View 1 (cartoon, rainbow, N blue to C red):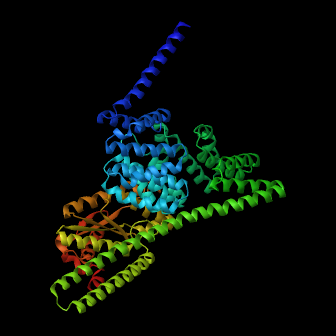
View 2 (view 1 turned 45 degrees about the vertical axis):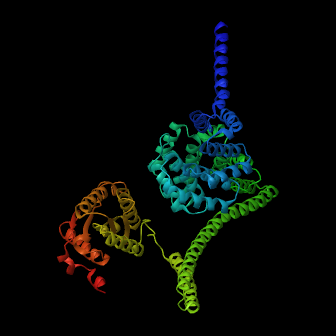
Length: 598
């Protein structure tokens, strides 16, 4: 008993000290270091100790007039974050918009914009969300704060994935995984990547990386992201005819997911379990989890778990012969399905509208610049008093014609690029046309800046034998594995494309021949070491490489292709699985010669 009284006394003393510190700190709000420390403390604990965070914000608000401008903006951001957290979305939106539009600290503006994107998405204000996403993308290149960039990348990836822009969503998720800030791991980026790939129906196999990411999430205490990945993996198994695997994954962690008090995630769990049990023929559990998915979905909204839940309940009642109940659930399913698809369509439409508005705005700005130039020229002609009237009309008409031509050119370019397939359908890298376009642009820049470049051509050795022996499905997998290996070894500025069949090209800007040879050797070793053994045991896949450089050939792409292709054929004749530098003397041997001359 004495020890218990002593423990209570110690706890009470600690609480008194804490309260005293919290309430005394704002009295020094006029002191820059004190106010800054309190704001930093509030920012740190806002997601882990919301009560203490609220006390700090309330106390600082009373002394807001004494804060420096930068501190007032920081406080304004935290006020908006707090309002959003407690569900006062209108007040939160106004505060965050104020910071995003008017603060002079770009890091704070980016954080406010990222939070706004999340808030607007929750409120189904998709057009406003995509306008804010454009603002975030414009801010991102100037931000060096890794935590702020990490937050912005996460919100951008989720929003783009929801609108069907999976390629860009995956790119942001991969950037999160490649460069997490201190205190973060690959956990969140992996979850965004897995969700985007699954929703895009591009998750053909389950990369072990996702399982390692789940372990990382568990170790870091990021339970929501860990269980979200488990939900996606279970859905993957279900889609590939493995309902028992889906049940095993979700049943083991459902109680913990329930304890997270995150209804949206639990509804996903229950919807997937309901589908899995239905496929297993366990109608009792299918009904149980179908009802749970419907009950746990966001109130007054037709989400995917609600739609799935009604669909499962309809099928259960139909199999049990309860026609009236089946009909009632089917009607609810149809309403939920239509509302869910309408919401998906609204997201996609909002993205397209904002994209078109941005293009139109850019055209308007360029048109205004043209008009300003016309006015300047007109003023100069007026000052010179040389045929003022006729020259003014001429310049005005010329400017209007230029504007009309510019608008028509933009429209034609837009239609042309919409029809042009930029990516190779199998490997996801540049196709031949897009590679040529990008390579010529890079070479033109290199010619202007006098920076050398090198072109690597390579193809997989004896690839026809792979197709003949193992089939085209294995051949396609070999191609994709080889491309994946090369992607990891290439730089962001390198241009990588598939020219056709098993032949690929890589343009290395600002690269000497010696560096190009080393890079080609790295690619050759990587392909030989990893690409084949992961597909079929004892199957060896190698590649032959040829290199052409601007130092020998100049900055014309067709000459580089000719020289590199000649070197590639020399590598083939030398026994394959090797790298040869190009020699302009080999040009007549190349099959590209007729094309280059034409």
